Image (cartoon, rainbow, N blue to C red; front, side):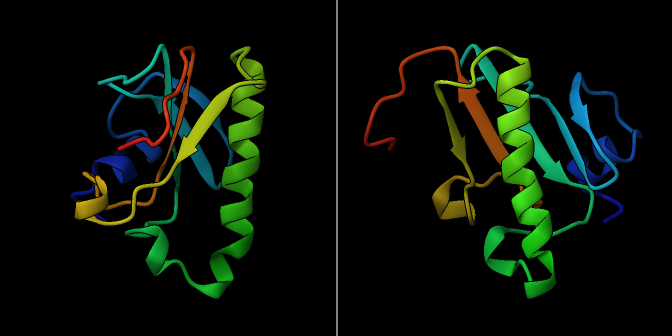
Amino acid sequence: MADCIFCKIAGHEIDAKLVHETDELTAFHDLNPQAPVHIIIVPKKHIVRLSQAAPEDVLLLGKMQYAAREIAEKLGVAENFRLVANNGRKAGQSVDHLHYHLLAGRKMNWPPG
């Protein structure tokens, strides 16, 4: 999508502090962190939200989850982190591009909100 900020970051049109990148995924520090560690993990393929993922996206979704594990390990938070995917505006999704928030570095409360 030409106007999608996450597509532009994944395509290196907009600078971001990258922490992980593959042919299919990009991960970067959130500009408005909600925890000491707050990483955004996005697929390079534009998928609006998790509920719009197609059967052919299953492997990509698994790679996103595994990337979260690798990133958490690289950042030293592998034993305690939260992985969040907001689906739709009422769930808190503010960018219409599927993404996971990897949050760590503080105690996470439950329920989250």
